[in-house]
Length: 232
Image (tube, rainbow, N blue to C red; front, side):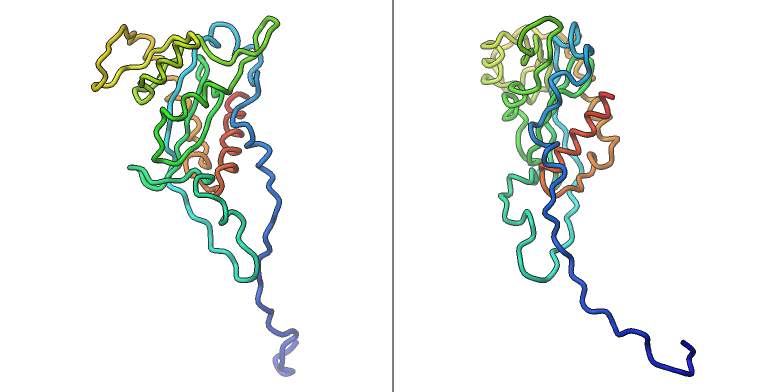
């Protein structure tokens, strides 16, 4: 309307409020914590399937989400335990740690997430109990590898006893405070570089390197999607 007529067409808008969304599209992807039994076809079988590497990596600091809008009801996730978010204080700050198990070729098999201050040795057995590989011949999928190449953080009496129980050969350097010394192959230990390269490829995804998800299940789902893309 012209300025001579004056007045406004409509009044001021009222207060706007956000509405919570109860849909969780990533929960089904995050369940299980590992890939399919045969994510890469025959690539995981044969010579490369006999070895696996272990490592852990801390992602960037978590960016907190905006505060909930005013109104009734609780913000989804605030009533969940702190451990469900896999966030904690470490030397690197407020972060999440990724515990990863890879096959001999450097492709991801299974992974777990925890708070940044959790030690990697506590997640050795859970990593070994998941991530089965389909055999070329008939039979149950193979769950445990022939050899493990791991970081020094996985060197403990409990882990070595677990490997002896299931006849898993290990290539893990011992710590300085350990009394018992045994044979150690530096040539085999160099293969752990494949796990380091895998973590580097995963961190090429910005959403993995810098966590944006509030809940650990959603972050684990994004990690699963990134691992699938590496297999493709």
